[in-house]
Length: 607
Image (cartoon, rainbow, N blue to C red):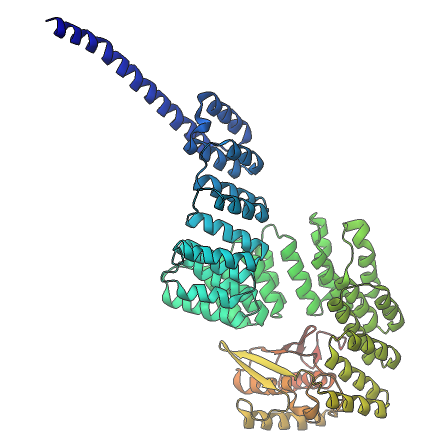
């Protein structure tokens, strides 16, 4: 009985204490859950500071799970430095703690700090997971740090994550942003499973590394193999690829996909479409897309300004610029390149000089080599060669930009027969080992046009002796998503017999209207391969035009791309042919667009 009594008394005191302990634990658990819920819902700093204080008072800061939610909340509200302070106060940070903090610094635009934290993590006992690797690879992408990215790729394989979808998609993106397309393709090809992110990363890698054809091929492959709809990032990259290639047909097809997928109102995609149509010489289409953007940004305005400038619509470009200023949008340095380009290609010298002077004082942008090159071009085109020459001598720029500057002056001096300035500009290019072939040929042409045949032949002999060859002229035309390329003097082109026959027929009709072929020193002009320049009628753009005439139905504009400047003889021929066959032609050469219609060109013979 005594034992039983003692036992019962013990139970009497034990059960309440157990209940109290359980209540305390439940209270702590509910407090913790409540605090975490507050952190997850928190969307402003005052609320976060109050919750942080409650965490401190409750003693939960030493709880890794709660501290990680606190770090995440600070990162989400872009207070990464405070998140870092919480991190350093943690007794036992885990992989989530490190990864969250790394993400915070990437969001702040400090990828280098993210790499430092990753290195610090490797010195601890905490091992990275797939999200850690994806985050640090993203840091390498932002820095375009291929060396570090390759080392992390090796670590990915050591940890057995080489087949992980998230990590591999990040690696494809990293290699693409580091201009290592082969590295990106290698990772992509080894992936056993791919999603829209990995496909998008690969397409972007091609598009951003001047491999637009591959980007378009992969986009077609994606549409064939996957049922997923392309997202806005993929579509904007494909549109950019079309823009870089000047592929209007492919661009229109992609525009259709944009509309079907409901991304036509997307800001980034709309900007890409404006740029694509402008670069394909469709300023009207470009303007239609531009008008659909409710609040166009500087990028959209700049694309429109540059497009109008290259199409010879200088006044429209300046009107767009003034409209942008009225909307209180600050122009970028690229915007001013477009404005000065517009002034240059439309003969608006005084306006152009006015914009140049306004850049530093009114807009806080210091002119650089790109802007001064536009001004040299602007002055040179209007015959103000001495001013252009003095400006070129005054500017101090890096060798690559210097070559563009002197190359621009050389072309202008050839146009106006200024042998003295042409000699000096050529000397600058040859001594800097930049654009050497172009310098020799252009100077030779300048001598020829000035009647200095001995100097011209001497330069040609020097080119042959030293093995210097100029880039051959080529043109291409897109028909039904296929691209046909033509080279100067190559009579064995696509449908060659029909092309040559049509060109001869058009030559006769042009002569009936007073055309005299090759009357502008074309034996020495800088636009085609020298060995074939005597066959003016087989210049690459003429072959492309003839092929377009026999292949493209009447009523459809023929669009031709050319890798060099269109020669003056072909320019005159295209004007006459547009009137003879009553069709529109658009030619995009290395400088600008030419729209031929009813015997005239939009450039007004000023290019």
